[in-house]
Image 1 (cartoon, rainbow, N blue to C red):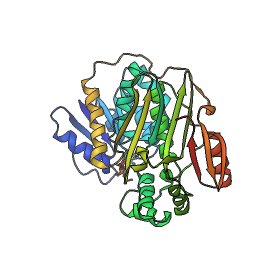
Image 2 (image 1 turned 30 degrees about the vertical axis):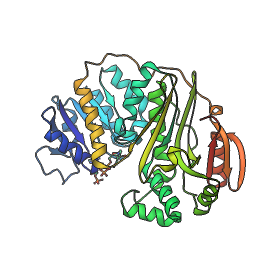
Image 3 (image 1 turned 90 degrees about the vertical axis):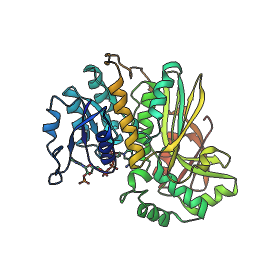
Length: 357
Ligand SMILES: NC(=O)c1ccc[n+]([C@@H]2O[C@H](COP(=O)([O-])OP(=O)(O)OC[C@H]3O[C@@H](n4cnc5c(N)ncnc54)[C@H](OP(=O)(O)O)[C@@H]3O)[C@@H](O)[C@H]2O)c1
């Protein structure tokens, strides 16, 4: 299969190196920045790549929503399969990109966009063939897990721990997307779409860990509990609820012991029961491997028929996700949606203890 890679950063470089070493694939083009396109395969002209009839698959490894979304759309319009790692761009145009791929008999795969190397999307697709998936939840962001884990183990304050995470490369210079829950929001939408075979809404509030303090973690520790940032999603029939919040966990929960920047996804299905997937949600080599697994799956798949996978009519019903919310020293009962809105309005930390997960 002849492949073009858009983006030559941390992940892109590892994907290119693996493709170059693989006899099964041919790396035809690499999109680089102007001035950095120093090798024959490199170009800064995306038009040259997308109009090349020999390119069969485009691998989107760019950051941010734009122009990544537009490039994926152009690639699918030009009859090329797409593999993406870019959760922001995928979430932004999920329905449009999926429908375009389906109309043109092409594959759009996105394992690495949700959980790095963890095969959560592959497992979700497999489970959904024979099961109704009823819930998805867990630790889906390594940066926030690194911060909470370090604060828990060393009794450290939030700000110096964040600075250390930045120094070690676990947090970006602008950590907003991780701390606010936006990164998890994109991931829980993408995996819920895949599990429930529908297009889930993005119109729900999210709470992150910006207001987390050492005192708060100490309070929970005295009760034999801790807090981890979770993506949460539940489904009953044709209704679903979805959210992002710090969740209160007993210290006996597996998630309470997930170290450093690791992730732990749980899928609950009607026949298979509970399945937990643990691994590295980021990092150059592991994430690049998930990209190459997607490329290989496309190369080995029979031609795609035009079936619509994401075709279920589903309704967002926030009443399905409810429990206790610890907000600024008070405990309230409600749906996660309501509790998030209250915490956001008050500018305070929310710790959510679900009743029904
Ligand atoms: N890093 C991870 O562990 C990880 C895990 C899962 C998913 N992802 C996703 O993977 C994607 C890439 O992440 P990364 O860590 O590889 O980022 P990165 O190291 O910043 O690489 C992105 C590369 O794309 C280049 N680029 C940006 N816009 C471009 C454009 N319009 N034309 C040509 N080149 C352009 C950047 O150049 P400049 O530096 O000059 O801007 C940079 O070289 C992101 O969507 C991220 O969310 C990353």
